[in-house]
Image 1 (cartoon, rainbow, N blue to C red):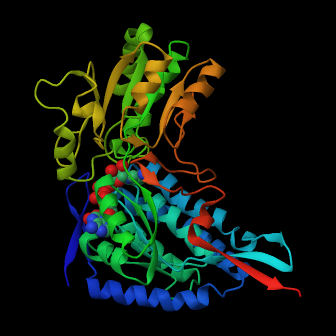
Image 2 (image 1 turned 90 degrees about the horizontal axis):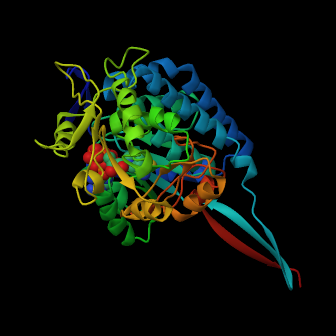
Image 3 (image 1 turned 120 degrees about the horizontal axis):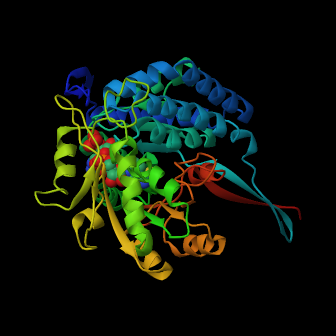
Length: 453
Ligand code: TAP
């Protein structure tokens, strides 16, 4: 049995050794999930709803434990980790309402009665990245279970601890064996098996665009259903007519949250040229004010990066002589620390401007007018998120419609809200998660005609 030792990114100390599943063990889990699916889909809607509510209650009763686990296993500041555990509870509670509302349609046709049913798609393979282990797990797991699917979840090799605990809480809540399984393992082994195994009918993948492309190719062999949540390089567009103080004060948190390891990070700040100087003078104290340090401290706002490898990747975007405008702080000593870093001026061909860094590095670039701002925001293969700062309501709407991205916020940097659909344009993804329609992504529509003559 191969194992992986989870490392605390803030101390570089080992936390726990986790057994990694083999391809054969993945096959056995998939077969258990397929067997469990026969009875899970037959559980009365009200009972399925009750079990999901109990699952939410179990998570709620263990918020502190889950948050502490994420802090030691992933380096998330305790405040953020507590919010993330709370989101698992809330997403479960939200989709617990779905089984009793999965209505079909009655369609007028001649010669009979025509009705549609929403049938569960079957076993779902859920492949989760390391940056938000808990929320991303819940976004796939909760609506899939509500739809009557069974789920085999593969956490990222580096961050399996909270997923394993959530799997135990599902059993404690009374979910039958095999309905929700957590399978730590390598992407190339367990993840690949989920993609290749014919009994898995749908893959929900969040991760890099590169691996997403490979998964899409693998799914094509079986015409397997697929949701992809991939990378991003989102713009934070600041117009001269906006509340510049607020735009500058909030900009660091829109990109340095989770040390920038956030697919929604607004990692390109675009500022109307006429206010660039003022914006930069306000941004500097805001960046220097980000509290970077011990993730177990309640007032910490930014923790370490996930690994030494990720830190090296981030640092490669800031070579010797890079145009560093200013930087925040980071602790010395052990831990995969990297200070919040602002690059300006940066050409639009610079990799720091074009590539997803997935770390606390942001570029600031001026634009001349509204048309150029939209063109610059769209000049990326990605289209996941973004923010628009303006006091002109017409402009807010025009720019919102013009930017090719799945999730925008005006005069704010809203994080993902489970009530609303979330997903990407272009190479940022395929399909949508969350919101009122998420359960549909785990069902097939079946049409039945009943002759009356
Ligand atoms: P990836 O390297 O793509 O890994 C994501 C997951 O896929 C991990 O569980 C990984 O397992 C697994 N995997 C790797 N190779 C696989 C294969 N051949 N078959 C099946 N599964 C495989 O991404 P990452 O570095 O963990 O995460 C960072 C990326 O995720 C960023 O690009 C970020 O933008 C994106 N992301 C997007 C979103 C949304 S919502 N759009 C949210 C968060 C993150 P192992 O870890 O065990 O290798």
